[in-house]
Amino acid sequence: MTAGRGFVLASSYVLALAAAFGLVGIAAAWSGQNLQLLLQSPAVIGSVAVLFVLLALSNFGLFHIQVPAAIGSRLNGGRRNGGSVCGAALLGLSSAFLIGPCVTAPLAGALLYIARTGDVATGALALFALGLGKGIPLIAMATIGGKALPRAGAWMEDVRRLFGFLFLGTATWLATPLVPERFILLPWAVLALAFGVYAGAFDRLRISRGYAVLTHSAGIVSLLWGSLLLAGFGLGASDPLTPLGPLRGRQASGVRLPSRRRISRRSAPPARFPACSAPPLPTVGRACSMSPQTGASPAARSSGQC
Image (cartoon, rainbow, N blue to C red; front, side, top):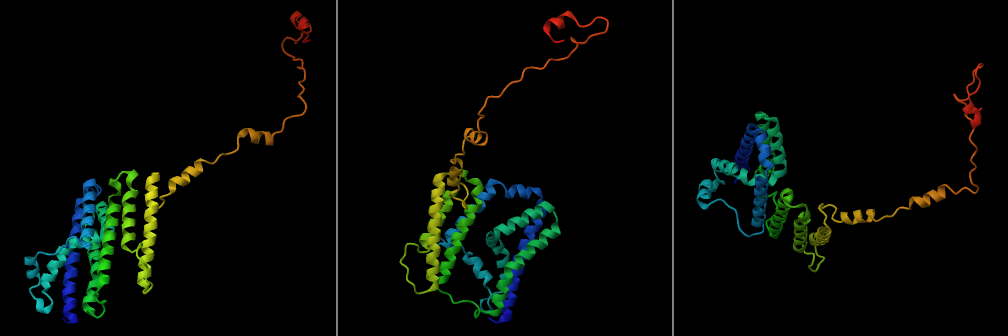
């Protein structure tokens, strides 16, 4: 297949993919606030998390997701020339639903923004541009040819399983609002321990390639992190980034400050001599008021105020 033929087939595939995303953007703009409520519902969140789990199991080799043979034979009608343009376009249109989970985070953010604004043109253009951005590397590789691609080998299976762990991590992150706060760290701990075992944390290291040293180190780090997450789960933590946070809180609450009595004794020493109280001064009031005619009253004279 020539470079021009590869460019035409890849372009038809990418344009159909971007058109499917544009239709999704139009639907999101028309739905408005209803789409926000739908995307935040537990049923939709749980369904998307289950979809990521199925994709992860497929990457681990439990089953394979592929187009049925009858449809695949029709799509590959022009096999000698690398396939037909219509077949590539139909394949791109249908693969938008399979590739969509790979960009769940930016796609969900774009859908929420489009639903909030309600602008049909913005929704269509934004998601059409998202589809084009995803397909530009494919067009470049199809035009250059197989010379720019690395050789197939066992490393492809490793990359496939790595994406399986990434899918499981995405499913765990999506299902976090549905899990009780007490058990948030448990799936993260199991995932970290599983990746550490897969990366070869318990295997004997043979220093032959830098790739082996890198994977072995990543396995050890993941195993240690999984152990910390398990410890945090036992302590009642809920944040995967600070699994030992409850210990810090207990240490802060266990610090004892000096009592007020000691501080008052040091700052204000006792007086050596008792304080002397002065006798009350005689008050001059209405009882002592004298007029030049009558003088002071008898009661005032007997009390000694005058």
